[in-house]
Length: 86
Image 1 (cartoon, one colour):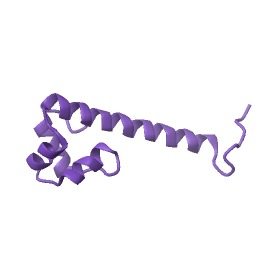
Image 2 (cartoon, one colour; image 1 turned 30 degrees about the vertical axis):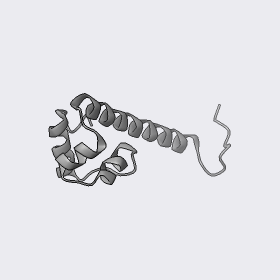
Image 3 (tube, one colour; image 1 turned 90 degrees about the vertical axis):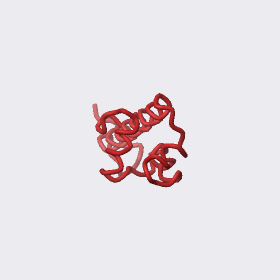
Image 4 (cartoon, rainbow, N blue to C red; image 1 turned 180 degrees about the horizontal axis):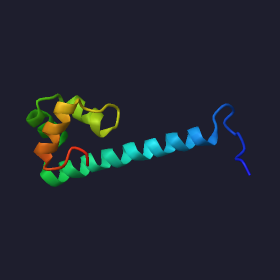
């Protein structure tokens, strides 16, 4: 039995993809938060060590943006984590 179309033009498969992608972002953000905590970095100290602004790190943690690849590798090295994990 198909799901009712309660969101008008949105189909269940599109809603499911949105929910799953949102959950993925939450996992990534939580991993970054945990890695920062484990490595002893605050937003400010990680920003300084990575050569970026504190606002950038805040936006990564909040899931608003993803850092450029070279910055991701630098941050992963600082945190002692694999870039793919973060």
